[in-house]
Length: 115
Length: 109
Image (cartoon, rainbow over all chains, first blue to last red; front, side, top):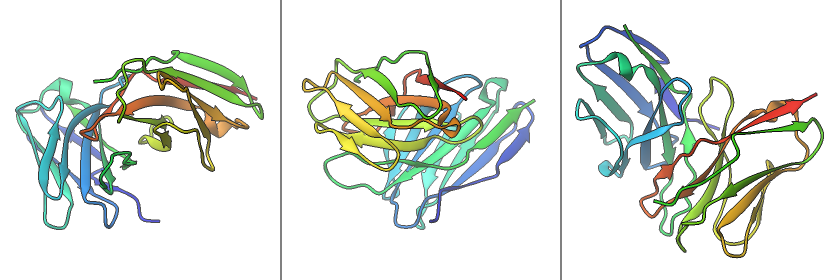
């Protein structure tokens, strides 16, 4: 079965540079979530999109922005990178239906290292 | 947001059942209880979820207390591949997963 695809899998950037992470959800999934997981930390919710509209926002810094495109893939744009942005970034997708209980399917993650 | 409390770690012997507890005393009536696990260097993986009734799937069983303030994830026969951090999460009405610290499950051969 098709899974969530994330690219790139590894990314090394310098401080103050920009980075773009991409997420391709499972076909027919219309909801995408972004999470950040620092070293030894639990995943922290950043932002989510449903049907190409932002549906919820978590602890996403103002330096980060994201969007979901017409083909449902999503991109997380990170500017003015800081050392503390070094983390694993996970994307998850789910099919949304009324009443809650969505299962989120996670991608393998993008490991961002900021030097 | 409803919060969850789990033991930091648990150990179990291979081939034995494992019961992972979780407290979620502030859960609201429409919040779902989700369990995910994360193996080292991998993305989180869905295990099971439920609302009020006990649930079974091919991976595990979920036992939910009658007052819904606690739940238990049951792995019927743990294998070495089940060693992971198990997260008990309450999904709120915004479909947001609020992650806690999770339980690190150690399986002894």
